[in-house]
Length: 128
Image 1 (spheres, rainbow, N blue to C red):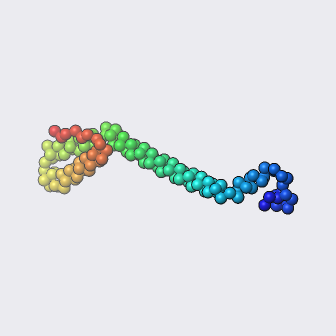
Image 2: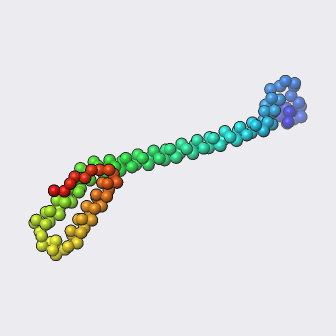
């Protein structure tokens, strides 16, 4: 393969193509190239995993901020839920007697909101 682009004429003595040819025919060269390709693939994969984890972390932070701050945050939702139950108990006690599921629905809503607050590490104010 030490000829001029496959035409059969040999390169002159000392031509740089001889050293390139020797280099390419060396098995360590190909081992190095394969190792380099594997390293590039692994680093690329690690970068993708890192970016995906950063995206997930950003999304989780965004969800937590929404829970804490949007329209007064989850504490406001819990307080409003409790105030609604107190209003119904004081103004329309017969409504709760006639429809007992209302109390269960409001309690279920509060339990759901408390679970969300716990997951988002939000301190919930005590009920009065």
